[in-house]
Image (cartoon, rainbow, N blue to C red; front, top):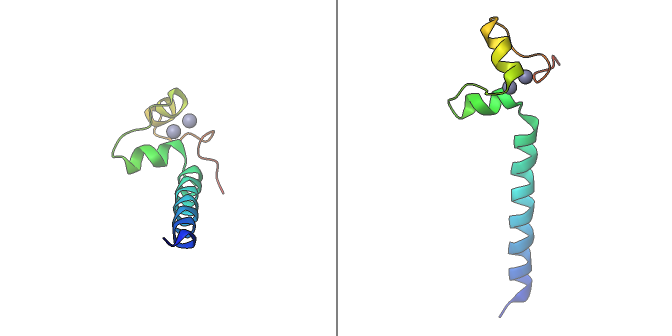
Length: 62
Ligand SMILES: [Zn+2]
Ligand SMILES: [Zn+2]
């Protein structure tokens, strides 16, 4: 039994899931909703969209 291989696989899985989480965290709530094919349900975003704008609180300009 190669325990080193097993540990490496475990570490890789952990790093991969952490990287995915970090990538998701970079997206705003509206981008995540859009990626899921939906409209953002945050009240502040719904209000901004109703005004024909994008919620600046959740989507700060870079
Ligand atoms: Zn939003
Ligand atoms: Zn918002």
